Amino acid sequence: MRTHYNFDNQVVLITGAGSGFGKLAAEQFAAAGARLALCDLNEKAVGTLARQLEAGGAQVMAMACDVGMPAQVADFFAAVDNSFDRLDVAINNAGVSHAKVRLHETDLAMWDRVIDTNLKGVYLCMQQELARMVTRNSGAILNVSSAAGIMGAPFISLYSASKHGVIGLTKSAALEYGRKGIRVNALCPAFALTPMVEASLNAAGGKSRENLEAGNPMRRLGEMDEVVQAMLWACCDDNSFMNGAVIPIDGGLSAT
Image: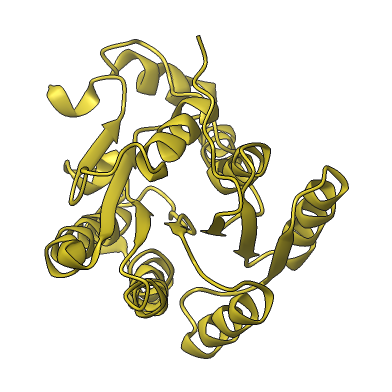
């Protein structure tokens, strides 16, 4: 039986909402009654999503934002303040990967791109989110890390480093802000069938998917809905004592 969540009138912020986990999360939080603040680097994608959700009756504020750029993050949160009276839930989901390459073959441009989005972006957004939540002594932040943030990840070392950093921010903030009624947790999906993963698999050829499936204890990749259901559960009011958790959604991969 599918769980039905209630986010009536809550303001839920999602970065990287134009595709993948972020898009599906926006759709499912809207279906659960949430008011939505959405951003994505792809202005057209997040705008199209906003119009779709508004047509279904949701209240949505959406705009383009590069989460690695402090000025753009500040503008986004100013727009959130103009649209809503508070912030209840924030899902820091925006992220990028990089081509599979050995560590010595990476360069600073690749490092800057991955770290700016995946780690600096989470840091900049968390600063803004916490500043708003602390005034109300309430809130839930969910940072999307990765199975690569709790394990080694050969050939995507920069991505792995960025996602390990997200977990460090998550745990530290959970300890700092728990007494303020703010819960901060991290979700760690393994390979799931997102557009980013599918593009990577297509570039690498079909055999890569077979290898990924063979390496998972459940012998398959994850589905986006399986990850988004965990997002809803992690952020709901009923789950009020989970703080500082690092939640693998990986088919058992991190148990090996």
